[in-house]
Length: 120
Length: 108
Image 1 (cartoon, rainbow over the protein chains, first blue to last red):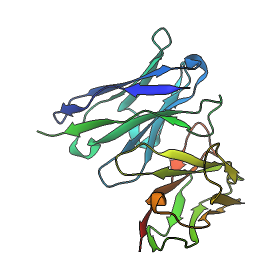
Image 2: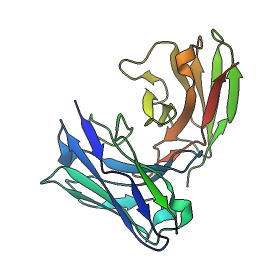
Image 3: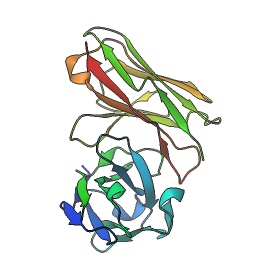
Image 4: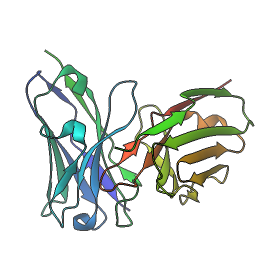
């Protein structure tokens, strides 16, 4: 049984950066396509980007290009999402998600979510 | 970019009702569409994948259909525990994904 455990809530100042982690257990981390999805308060789901650790290259939604960096550490089965130049509109719950069956067509396991609050 | 237009944005129905949500893609995405359920304060849950396949463990009252640009998600008999927001998600242009705007389902 796959489990994704994310780091805790963060409060950040505008203009700063935040780095959220997602630790996987119970599966083959390197072969997963790990995505990051965010949800602003009262809003819908927004895919930000993803990475397949065994390949190492991340892909990003155009909206976040240049501001988000997604990495993965195979030695600790942990993925990271770093978002820079934070603004109030980045206040959201950030989720990591994978497809446990290999491939990258859907998300059947999700982390519990990490609330990032951007406030001066 | 592929845009996904979901409707309605909110829906009120009675227990036992048949509920239908639609999702329209801005271009042909074959059957590359999934449906998720999200309850307040929880992560989304996969219900339907590849437009019409029921995820393991999901009740059979949930179903999906469609291909190309037009897709439908149906709850055959609404139950109180189905109160949630539902999202479609396309994966035609991997490794990029797009979600619909969501449909909030309430009990009448």
